[in-house]
Length: 134
Image (cartoon, rainbow, N blue to C red; front, side, top):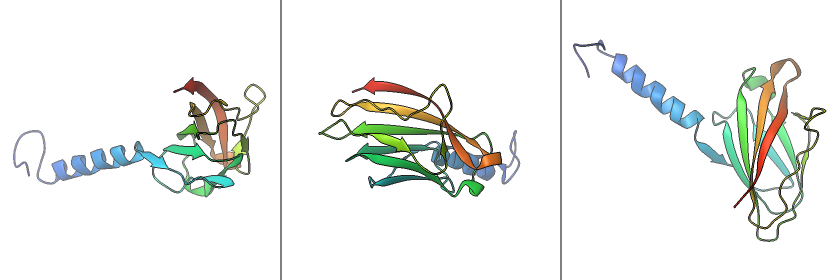
């Protein structure tokens, strides 16, 4: 622990803690594939990944736990069959410009969906995507 220099005793511990917290918030959390794929907004990680094993519905849960304006990223991977679909369920809002969760159909395709949390309506707004990675 530093006793001189820019950090007083204990400050380095705080900096280490904040770095660990940052790493955890930005780590990738795997979501289990199920008929309803839930993004639990009470969990610290804001980057998620799921492999679709069938046609699925995406939901956002525990919205009151999230912070207004937080950005969430979902990596969606098609399984070996492909042609799986993803639809918006409760807690997920679609706009007029991006009005569906259309994902790539090819087997093994990887897409990234981006959402921003809007606290006034406790809704995860779908704001865009980048599709077609392998």
